[in-house]
Structure formats: C-alpha cells, structure tokens
Amino acid sequence: IDLIDGISFLLLVMATFALSEALMAIIKKIDEKKREEERKAAAELGSMKVSKEEVKEMAPVIGRSSILGFLIGVLPGAGATIASFLAYGTEQRLAGSEKGKLFGKGSVRGLAAPETANNAAATGSFVPMLTLGIPGSGTTAIMLGALIGYGIQPGPRLYIDNPEVFWAVIVSMWVGNIILLVLNLPLIPYIAKVLAIPSRFLLPLILFFSLIGVYFVSFNTFDIQLMIIFAIAAVVLRLLDFPLAPMILGFILGGMMEENLRRALLINDDSWSFLWERELTLTILVIAVLTLFVPMLMPLYSKWRKNADRAGEGG
Image 1 (cartoon, helix red, strand yellow):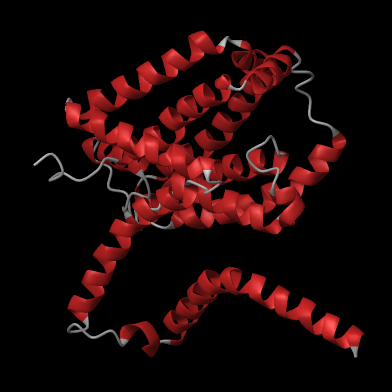
Image 2 (cartoon, rainbow, N blue to C red):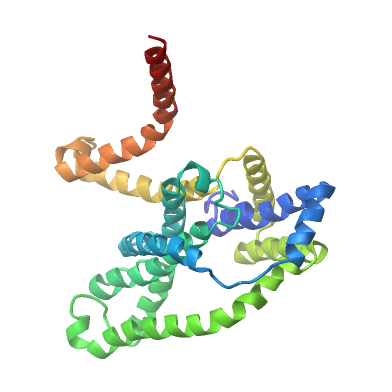
C-alpha cells in the first residue's frame, strides 16, 4: 500500500546523490592512504580564480549547453533536471575518451555544462507559460497560479493585455542573473571552504538532512527504508563504475513516455503506425535507435578495423 502513490523523485535523487555520496565517503575513509590524500587536498584548496585556459575550454561548452538547456526548458514538463543531465552526458561524449574520464573529478567542462543548462532551462520554461499558459516546470506552475490569482491569464494575449507583466518577467531574469553574478564571485572562496569541514561533522549532517528531508515530504517511514535501499544500490553501481544519471533520466522520462504513448495509441486506435507514418517522427525514431546502438557497436567496429589493419600489414 505504501507504493500506491508511486516513488518520489526527491527520494530517488537524495538516495542516489546525497546518501550514496555520504556512504561512498565513509567507504573511502576506511582506506588510510585515500584519507590522507583527501586531507591534503582539503587543506590546499588553492586559488578559486578561473584561468584563461579554463575560460577558453568552457566558452564553447557554455554556448552548446545554453542552447540545449533552453530547448529542453521550452518543452513543457521537462525541466532543468533533465537539461542538466543531458548537457553533462553530451559534453562527456564530446570531450573524448581521455578528457571524458575527468568528468566527476573536477573537470571544468563537467562543472560548466550542467550549471549552464540548468540556468538556460529555467529561462526556457517561461516560454510555454507566457505564450501558451502551460507551465514548463514546477516553479513556473507556481507562478502560473499566482498570476491567475491576480486575474492575469498567461497565454497568447498576455503581451497585448498585460505587457507590463510580460516585460517585467524578462527584465527580472536579467537583473537576477546580474545580482547572482555579483554575489557569487566574491563568495566562491568562502563557499569552497565547506570542503575543509572535517568529515566527522559533514557526513552525519548529510545523512541527517537527507533522511529528515525525505521523511518530511510524506511523513512515511517506508520512504526512509526505500531511500536506504536505493542508496545501497547506487553505491554498488558507483563501485562498478556505472553512471547514475541514466537512472534518474529514465525515472523522469519513463512516466512521460508511458503517458504519451498511451495517449498516442488511444488517438490512433491502438495502432503503432504513427511511429513511422510521418517523416519527422520516423527521423526522430531513427536517431533515437542510432543513439542507442551505435555506442554499443563502436567497440566491435574498432576491433574489426584493428584486425583488418593487421591482416593488411601481414599481407
């Protein structure tokens, strides 16, 4: 009966990224060598200033992730979370095998991509809300309710009937970003000092707030038990070097895919032909299939090429 309402997204995220991170840190602390290395790294944080080389490396990443994040944000219901994970995964692939291994270990590309996509998606989510009256995220859904409460109906006529509201929202984004920049730049060195907090204080706090946060959402102890199960599974996956982002994306997109597939089948009298009848749908389907199978077949292709080259040299 505890699973009737489904599994909370917050529960899954907190289990896989907060609780599992704390458990991984505890496991690493068992290794005395790693423990000493982490102490040394925490004591020598160094300069927080971005070098010219890092700026050059981040500039194209920021451009690509901004466009990707904005387009994802425009899609109703997609949100900044999906944009962040997609941008991170995309940049990891574009970085290549060598630089891709640095993701998750302090790579500036890995830091810039999800944060840029997150900000861009937050902006893009306003497009369907202001133009169609459809909230693009949870935040815009709250804003939609607030606007309706004041008698303002977002939609195609918002720009004509209430131009002051329309432009106020756009200007607030610019002002908010500037204020955020002014506040964050001087505070970065102090925020980074959090890493210097001894793990004996930091880890119990992470565990406490993760468990209490999930419990306060539903006030159900079963959620805490489920969270621990997911956290243990996430630790096992991380020890086996499996990325956790695909699991989160599958959890978010799975329900949306199922709902829209059911709707499409209902409209098309339970016929699957809508997947290939239109050129655009067929193209998207082919790209999706290639995206799924090409990475799986690339090692086989590389092995075949090596064998062919060896055979050619031998001949």
